[in-house]
Length: 204
Ligand code: 5GP
Image 1: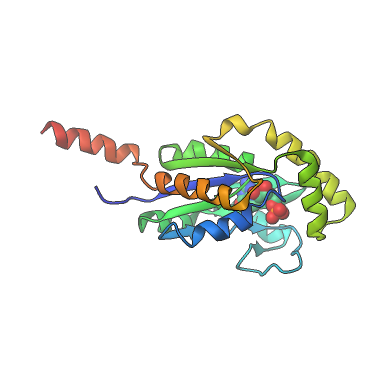
Image 2: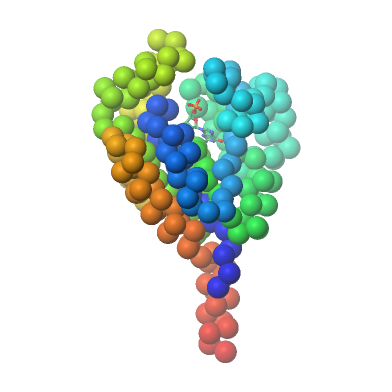
């Protein structure tokens, strides 16, 4: 059977080390497309427009909502974040594994639309204290934003059971190995339409 593309959703609090993990894993999981989201939040030091996110104004974002450009979008920490539908569809068509770094709301939207080819993973720190430590170490956010992110993290952690897998990122090497195994399996998911076609062909 030919590869028909699949989705790997990664969620977890900001500061849980998702980006570092994705970097590690992306070197070894083969052909994939990392979905670059669009956001209205301000750009952080070290980030690049078109690499980490497409940074746009609220007006531009709302225009894209109207034009139905987003596969899903959500308000996170008071900013808009969204996934554009076009590059995702193209990558899936090319048989790639599409990797999303999106929040719990986004996971639900993707699950509703592409449930049969989606694998979801929640990544977090060993504790709330450790998350606070990492956010402070990062040194990019104000006290208010750190408090905001921690409140948000508390709410997100309540929803871990909505995910198929759960990684506690206390050891980057171990966490990366675990995620590589999940990513390899994610690629093997087969769309319901392909299964149905197989059954008809198999009977004949
Ligand atoms: P940050 O501001 O730290 O880059 O991201 C904040 C949160 O927004 C993270 O939980 C991240 O997963 C989520 N996020 C980033 N892009 C998207 C997106 O396109 N859609 C949704 N629903 N959430 C996103």
